[in-house]
Amino acid sequence: MRILRYTDGWTRRHFLEQTAKGIAAAGVLAPLWDVIERTGSCEAAYPPELLSIEAYTKGKLKAGQELNADNVDLVKDLLCPITYHDIKHEGRVADLVPTENDIYHLNPKPFIDATAGNRGKYKFGPDGNVWTVDGKPWQGGSPFPEPKNALEVRIGAALSWGKWDCNTLNVQERDYDIDGVQNYAYQFHWAEWQTVGRLVLDPKPYQPGRENLLRYNSIIYTAPEDQRGTAFLQIWSYDQRKFPEFYGYTPMLKRVRTFPTDQRFEPLLAGENFYITYLWNTGDPILTWGNFKLVSKGPMLYGILEKAYQRPNWGFDLCGGKTGKKFLRLQLQLVPEMLVIQEEPVGYPRAPIGKKHIFVDARTQHAYCTVSYDRAGKLWYQYELGNAYYDKSDNGKDWPDKAPDKFWAWSYVLGRDIQNGTSMHFENRPVQAGWRTSINDPATFDDFCTMDAIRRLGR
Image 1 (cartoon, helix red, strand yellow):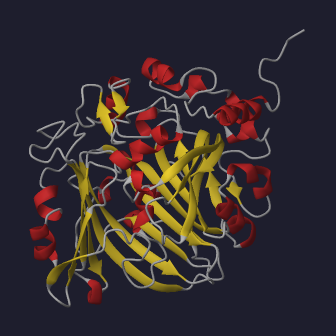
Image 2 (cartoon, rainbow, N blue to C red):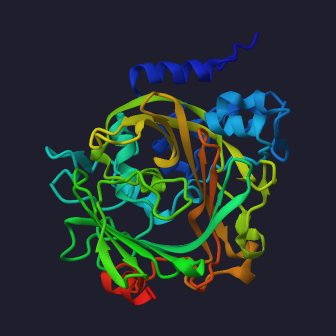
Image 3 (cartoon, rainbow, N blue to C red):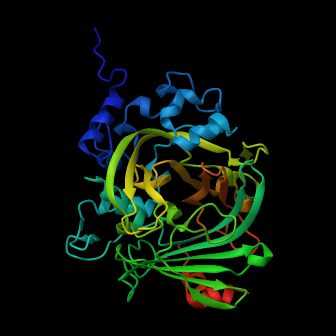
């Protein structure tokens, strides 16, 4: 007689038991990072049912199928609540694709290598910030790949958004009403520059004289014409208790003004339905939030790696709503282990958000989704962030000249307000100004991340 080691429901019981004990470390069959360092793959850390949607559903769904209102109830437990609602009731559809197990397709290679090489090197200091064991600032990689608590899960996303020393991205934004009618459209250029935790650009790991800072981040609007030249610049302190300096250039006034940086819950421009608190799912200094708690862990369907860049102009197909354009049509894959962290706005007495649930891929500590609840505890807003592993051999004709032949980067955002019915898309694709995606380009700082830059690029 053959005794089954992993019977039906075993993984569910395993995740429930770990959640009850507050265990956030990843891996089911073995500690995840021991497996990654040995094989470069996540596969040996999980049983087959967590590595294939076909195995998970016992053949009822498989890669290559469309997920739609007729079959979504088979995987309701694998979806964020608003995603489920939109597929079930709003005509949203998605394509199921195989699970990616190569860790170097899930985060940049320098970041993954630094995570492995710096294991055990970091601790929280008396001020609540992350320091090396000898008291220096963070030097790159996820600081706690084997987290012991919810804050250790979340701090990595606060230290590095894009996981590169610097990067620029081009964004097409479209904003839709309750029926899926487009009300607004914007284009902008996004830039990030790390001053600490640098892994590729010299000098590293710190930019001399800026060790007390964390990053520079700019947003420069290029369309429509009446907003062209509008720009925003944030300069982030390393201290996660402090708000960043927040500046904006206004073409109408032709000057830079200072914005109230603690007001993180207002749209930057008319018609947008998201706030800067959601950027990269950690748009605020992490210690201005609190009461961190692991509320669940387990498998999830999510758009971890998108392939929209293979299409002309890197565009997504659209679906849903009365117009058929309300949502991005995403490629969902089974993520074997997603951590759901609850946090509350302890530093914002007037915040409209009562709590957030942040969905974090346990394999990389990368935050992929935020589900917000209002002050009354009602479901309110979902911010979905997706990435891609870009490969020039798939689409060489549209390749940006300042990007490597293969790289991991941001791909899309889908913002959804379930209370007023609006939705929003961000897509990484060429913009009107002609700028393109770049990775670790040393010119990024002077070109986009200074006060002089946002003045120069403004009209």
